[in-house]
Picture 1 (spheres, rainbow, N blue to C red):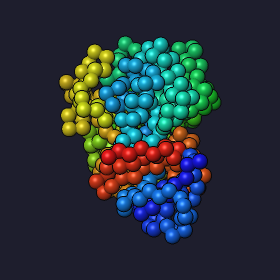
Picture 2 (tube, helix red, strand yellow):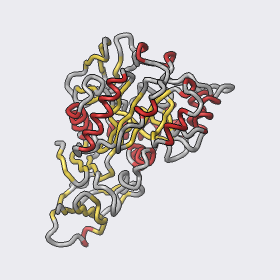
Picture 3 (tube, rainbow, N blue to C red):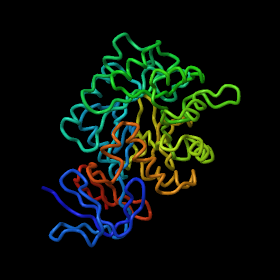
Picture 4 (cartoon, rainbow, N blue to C red):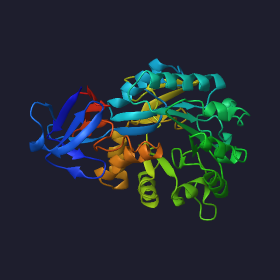
Length: 382
């Protein structure tokens, strides 16, 4: 049995900040939060040295990290590398993300994620399949030759992960009527992305159960005063979640500020869309036949086309505070509680509360993550 108490921390429980409180962990879960003077004698003590203790961060869009890209080698070792690269920046739960690729790669990625979950790889909670059922006109760097209509048996493949959450990004305007409804009925989360859909296309998809939007503003029809487009549907609908890349490149800071104010509180979540450069010294990699270079945190092709990001989650929290002019509490919720709710896991992760999984991060005033825990297992990052 593993039992310990964290003291001398500024504790953020997912709702409020607390002083002079201790978080007691027993095995994989949070046992209690008590006044420090009430910590039982004999228990192992971890001194936080006045740093902030918060719920672990949850990223639903992670293409790569630590010089590894899921599309290049969809196996457990790649996933382990990605997990390790992102955990040093506060991510304790993630969806490894496969961008548009062959059916064989899709099957291999689903199999790898299932094996990672079965093996207990810390922090892997499912898979994100971003494509291939997208709109070529909004493809970004997704390979045009692999973007295709949904095959007859695609729903079986997309819903084949036995446990864990599956998120599929698609272009709703290219879907047959009822396809989104069928995916949702099989417990698949569906987001609109890389789409040229109209406002009416998107509202119809939401009517079938579509739950969200992938990297809001990017690779989707913009908001206009007579045709609200995908962005207008995303910001005006209270039922859906939006992923937001807060790196200052994908979305202008003024637009981030406006979007956070416009969207229903609790439905805007931070994502990284991270590429292999995160947690790596090598800031160049290949995406198919294209070289991607990260300069000053901006991942792009030689011609300047954005290609994922060089962003990590704790930086996204800091950036969102500055760009959206919000407090640390709301920025942390956007990176933990809100994505956990999107995944339907907010009864397990996203809070520091008795009975919740002991997924936690400790970070200093410079937003450096110094320690993290997944199911109560500690890693030190300094």
